[in-house]
Image 1: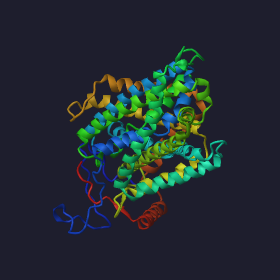
Image 2: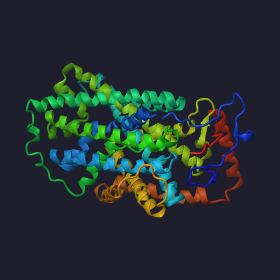
Image 3: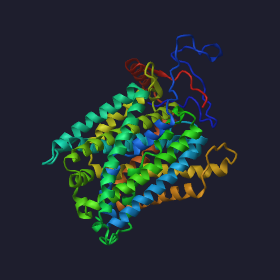
Image 4: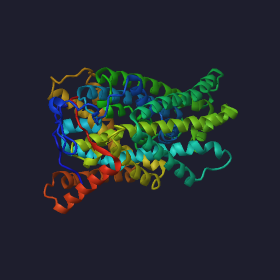
Length: 503
């Protein structure tokens, strides 16, 4: 199923150059005239980098998480505090990833950093959980919000059938997979357009909210911290919902090898994006509470729609369309970035070889994109939105906390490592401690969902020894694996990377 690593992890990023279908590299490393190298190209500029981060962060989170945050904090004031703290924590995590991304110039994000610092076993468990839980569940969550909001204008006076939501969601997921399989450039261009749609959706909420504040509509902010007392067990879940809404700041690190001038582009894109998102999120939540009471927000399945119906009249029909486009952009950005994680993990020998192959004409990691489709469909039709959120959050923040803790380890283990961008040590220390503390408390807050996530995470350990370490697999198993790989190569028209260029 999984091949042994072709090359070991090399700190300077220099991989061995290989051949395709038995053809040796041309003398001098040059390609014959008329033959183009089959590689992932550097097409991520600063604008595209910002659009990937903002476009992936602003999805369903700001439109569905306010309910989860409020439910687990118990008051308007504390919920706004949680939103602000989550923004600061996310900025700390993003700055830590900016240092990691400019020091280790390889794609793969969390997986690559854990591989560099902690070795192959934790890295394999990370990509195993990403493949089985995190990415399918995260895509299912954002896709369900997409399906609900895009159908909202057609079901104004009645409840939207759940089957209709899931069917239109399945179509949206398929379109995203096809788009990312066809062209890197088109995927990035559409992401830029959708990012502007997201910001428009946020502004449609913020501007009327600010006008309400100017008019003195502050009744729902009186005694903002009164209400149901927040329990120590509820706060981790409130942070889960808040951090979920900010999740996406790490996706640019998944495509480092495709970023132009990553030493400058990655930190700049991260800082600009996180400032825009944090300010936008806090103001959006303030805007909600200028018009909707805490009790009404708890009863709403689509907070942005409820808000727009109160203030915007007929124009409110545009809001669910903009929100649906926002969700679509988040789906697109997530699939674009995470497919590169699977691509890199396969290149390292931790996933089947087919996932590290590139389409011969489109130059996209086609197998790494489409592998997500069936797993996402299973998640889509097997769980509800809020249980899926808790389900994926445990594994996601556990490994992000470990990756950032690895930055601290590298400071002491490899002090002479080239670091074009460097953050104060308290930033990764506070962020990693918060992640791990939040994960530990969540096992008590929601033992069922997080417990399942924990058990599936542990299955990565025997899987590592079975698929990676065990050398003496039966000949029939190896032969069958080779036949499947060759067959998929022919069907999908993919080949291994011809020239793993020095990064």
